Length: 82
Picture 1 (cartoon, rainbow, N blue to C red):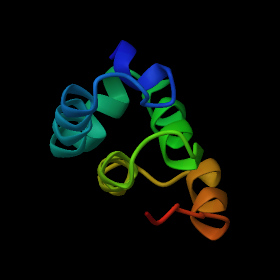
Picture 2: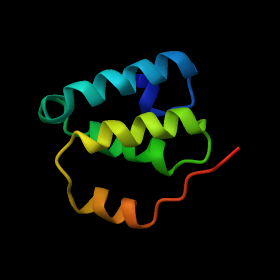
Picture 3: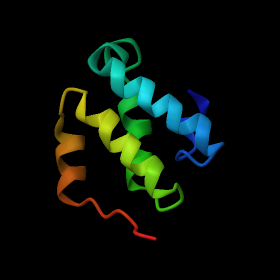
Picture 4: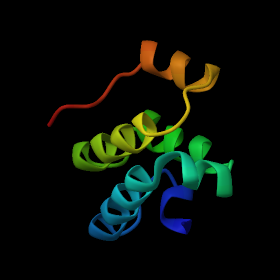
């Protein structure tokens, strides 16, 4: 989980796999690790990770319970395009 705490800027392949696993487990992961959602939001909002990582982070968030912080991020989402 340390991979996603640093704005998802670690090893790209490993970070991608972690985000995919989180996305597959969705609400269960959110219940076990409540601070996980804020780490994933940082991945989405940061301009440092690749587009692939940002997309995986968005997919992971889609499987979680939407809260105010996620809803406000969706409205102001700006994803970089290479």
